[in-house]
Amino acid sequence: VLDELRNAVGADHVLTDPDVVAGYVIDWTGRFRGATPAVVRPAGVDEVARVLQICAAARVPVVPQGGNTGLVGGSVPQHGEVVLSLRRLDRLGPVDAAAAQVTAGAGVTLGRLQEHAHAAGWEYGVDLGARDTATVGGTVATNAGGVHVLRYGSTRHQVVGVQAVFADGSVIDRLDGLEKDNTGYDLGGLLCGSEGTLAVVTAARLRLVPRPRHVVVALLAFDDVDDALAAVGALRRAVDALRALEFFEQRGVDLVRAQMHVPPPFPEDHGAYVLAEAAGGTDPTEALADAVDRLARVRDVAVATDARAAAPLWQYREAHSEAINLIGPPHKLDVTLPADRLAPFFTRIRGTVAAVAPDAQVWLFGHAGDGNVHVNVTGVEPDDERVTDVVLRFVAELHGSISAEHGVGVAKRQWLHLTRSPAELQAFRAIKDALDPAGILNPNVLLP
Ligand SMILES: Cc1cc2nc3c(=O)[nH]c(=O)nc-3n(C[C@H](O)[C@H](O)[C@H](O)COP(=O)(O)OP(=O)(O)OC[C@H]3O[C@@H](n4cnc5c(N)ncnc54)[C@H](O)[C@@H]3O)c2cc1C
Image (cartoon, rainbow, N blue to C red; front, side, top):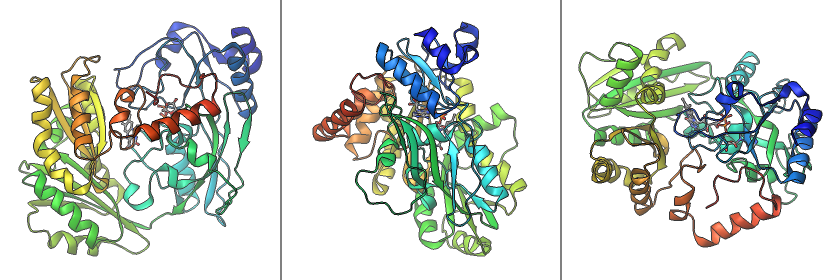
C-alpha cells in the first residue's frame, strides 16, 4: 500500500519518519495522541481520489486532517490509521464580486482566506482564534462556529457548494456558485459537521459579506455572571450591528494575565466580563454606547474603535485556550444551553464537577450570544472520563447540546445518545453505511 501511495502522490509526500509525523499524531491540546504508518499529502483532488481508491481496496482506514486544531481528538489517528493531510490543497480563487463568493481549496487557512477577502473589500463570515492554522476543509468538516455566528451563522451558512471525494474515490463537484439549486439532497450541507466520516472535502465555494468600514469593540465589566448574562440579552435587542458577544470570568483574566504577561483590563477586578463587537458600513459606536449606558449594572467599560486598540481587549478572551493549555492538558467540553437555562447552568456547574473531581479547576468562557459555553477542566487525568460524563449529562438534563461547535470527535462519541434520539442515530448509521460501506473514513469519531 505504501508503494502505491508513493506512486499516487510522490515519494516525498508519503511521510513515515516518526520524527516528521510526530506533529500529525497528537492533537492541539496534547490530550489525544496516536500513531500512523504514514502521513499522505496529496496535491489535488485527483490525487485524493487515487489515495482513497488505494486505501479502500486494501481496507486501510484513513483520518483526514487539515490544520489539526480540532478540539475533540477527531483529526488524530487513534488506532494506526493513515493520515490524509489536505494542507497542500491550498489554491485560492479570485474573489467573485458579482456573486460575493470565492472558491478555496481545503488546505487554505482561515487567516489567508480573510486576508484575500479583505484585499478585495470583502470578509468571510467565519472567524476563530485558530484562524492562522485551521483550514477551510477542517472548518467545513466540523461546521466551525467562532466569534461571528450571531451575525453570519456557522460555516454551514457560508457554504454554497463543495468539491469532495467519497470513500471509493468518486468525486462530487458543486463549485459553480449557484445560490439556488433545489435538485435533490444538499450533499455539501451534509458534509458540514460530518467530521471526515462521509467524504474528504477538497474545495469549497464560500459566501462573502461586505467588509464593514467601522468596527467598535467594548469590554464590559460586571459583578457576576447573572448581570453579564442580562447584559447579553439587552445588547442583542438594542444593537443591530452586533457581531460578537463573548463572555469570560475574572479567574480566566487572571490566568491569561499570568501566562501571557499582560496588564489588567481595569484598575479593579470584576466577577464577569462581556466583550461586544459591533460592525457596519456606518459607525455603530454611538448605538453601542447608548445601549451600554442603559445597562443598569455595568461596572466599568473599555472601548476600542480601531484594530490596534481592539487587539488587547480581544486577547483577554482569545488567549483563554492557549493559557489553559499551558496548565493543561484540559478536558474541553464545548456545550450550548437554551438561553433561559444558562443561569442555572452557571450556578451548578462547578458543584457538578467538584462532586467527581474535587481538585479540578473549571474555566468558563465562550460565545455568550449563542448560548455557547466552553467548559474547560484542568487537573484531571487525560483518560479520566468522569468529569465529561457528569457535565454532558447535566447539559442534556437542561435540554442543551453536548457539542456546540467543536464536533463530537473521539472525545464525546460515547455520549452522543444523550442528545440524539435512537431514530436520529439510526439515520446517521444508514448514511455512513451508504457512503462509506467499508468504514474506512475516520472510523473512530462521531458515531457511537
Ligand atoms: C485556539 C483555538 C481556538 C478555537 N476556536 C474555535 C471557535 O471559536 N469555534 C470553533 O468552531 N472551533 C474553534 N476551534 C477548533 C478548531 O479550530 C475547529 O474545529 C476547526 O474547524 C478545525 O479545523 P482544522 O483545519 O484544524 O481541522 P482538523 O483539526 O485537522 O480536523 C478536524 C476534523 O475535521 C476533519 N477534516 C479535516 N479536514 C478535512 C477535510 N478536508 N475533509 C474532510 N474532513 C476533514 C478531521 O478528520 C477531523 O475530524 C479552536 C481551536 C483552537 C486551537
